[in-house]
Amino acid sequence: MDSAPGPARAAAGGRGADTAAAAVRTEPGTRQPDGTAVSSGVRPFGPDQPDRPDQPDRPDQPDRAGPGDRGGAATGRDESSRRPQRRSGADPVKVLMHRHRELCERAVDPLEIAAALEAHGVTDRTAARYRHRDVFSLAEEMYARVPRGGAPETPPDVDPPTPHGARGAWAGLTLLPGAACALLLLVLNAMPGVVHHGTSSTHAPNTAARLAVTAIGALVVAVALRLALRLGPLRAGDGPSFPSTRLWVCCLLAYAALGDGLLNAALAGGPDTTWPADTAPLLALCVSVAPAAWCAHLFMAGARRRLAASRGLAEFAASVRPLLLGAVILYAVVLALLLGLCGAVLGQSVDYAGAACLGVLLLLARLLVAHGRTHAPAVVLGAATAVETLAVATVFAARLPGCDALGVPVETAVDAVGPDVVPGTACFLAAIALLIHALRTLTRASAHASTEDPLGGTA
Image 1 (spheres, rainbow, N blue to C red):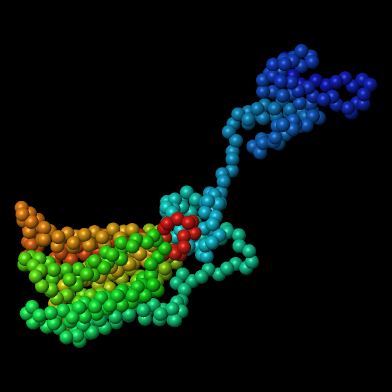
Image 2 (image 1 turned 90 degrees about the vertical axis):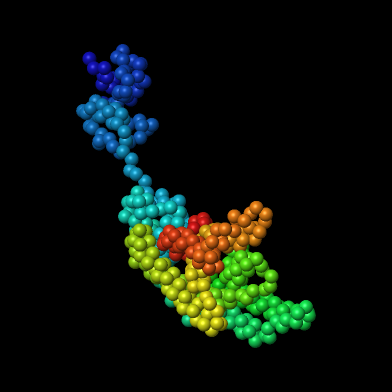
């Protein structure tokens, strides 16, 4: 006799022949009314008895058998309950869209989504886990699946045309620093020189007047430079502000004008009197603000065009690197020409290496700041300032008793190359460090996304 007998039925006497008795449902270990034990895992059913409501249908079970196959159907249900059930996997792109819902809703085109995803660590290898070949393809699907009411919006151009008025505004403002510096030098050259009359004080008012004019002129140049950097491609991005960066820039410019003369005087045992300032590098650097802005504009416009045409992060980075190097080299060539021209006009010898390295260093720092990367420029500019300050300080410290060895390295280098070796070395190393950093950061898609971070993080 089987361990799982058929369902018991009530007698039909006194009742209608079409009335079926309810099936007896018992727990394992109990007995049927006829004394037969019910085995574990088998539930007797009547042929007309529906399934129990507390046992939901499973999608992986076969169709229910007819009344004659109840035993086999029960055995099939028992075996299928032991097998792991198949589950349809969740849509991975939908999960990612839910995680970055605000980004998808506020994005104006797929490029903005791709850049923001790349800024938050999503690479082409990560996109493969979402069944896409690269981040750009993933961003296109995310953008297409965002529900938008009304007519579909036309994505804006990657490089929208700049109004002629706006471009003319920042292009004109970049000429102000050079004009202000040239005007200051013209006024200083027109003033009578300091007349020395032994111990007479008749020269003091003249010196005070020149210092006053120099201070006012420097303030005007600073204001003009600030106006030039408020608009256009060199304006600061949305990164955190480091006020120390301005201090380091002022120190580097001051050393470019006065540092070499101070170092020569210190090595000669002075300074006993004032020394002439090297104004040609300052004038060339101020005039070079305009070509620096145009070089930055060419780089940014080219990077946005590459962003639209690229189909992968590696492809985009490889196409943008030559643009960055080309912009830096173009600016260095223009600055070298300006240095030669300003030196000829002012009748001064120019330190091409030191001044050119300083100009490239300032351009790279400003490019990083314009893209919201403000920490590295502050650190590198501070390090260059520290090197120049330390070089002069060691010469003065060597005058202390028993400290003669402190000034030997700087004195040896100056004797071999000249005083230009200090700013040239400091600015060259700093520019190389910033160039390496820029080649890693400014070649990312996130560096050329919208200035406002849709995810609320720092790019």
